[in-house]
Image: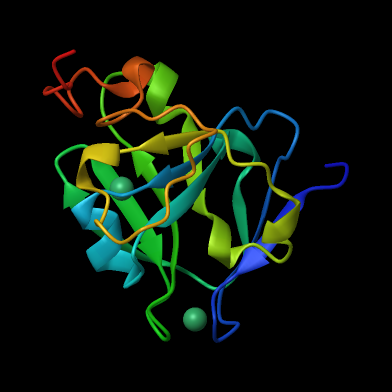
Length: 151
Ligand SMILES: [Zn+2]
Ligand SMILES: [Zn+2]
């Protein structure tokens, strides 16, 4: 894999590599679930092909955070590394979303979207230059976020 993305958890027990070329989306997620799971005021997720994502050190713990999402995190330091949609829809289950903060070089990313914007904390500065989706992005929405904002 040429020039992969690399990263790992806080304590170093987990490390991973991911394919960089096919990243379509780098999304700031303001959903309550991401907030609670990471302890941050929002989470930034980097979309990578599932086939190119591999743990090179350690075994992550698995959390089924809902009926359609699995999250992988470090059982030692608690750092959340990735989530993946599971189920029938291959077009969304064949990608993994990496927590940007776990990357070795997150500063090189270019954010593309704001999702679950309706749940943004009132004191968060707004990145007005990016498209804002009230819930999940439309191409991921069926079965995941059934309540798009009325326009
Ligand atoms: Zn760790
Ligand atoms: Zn979220």
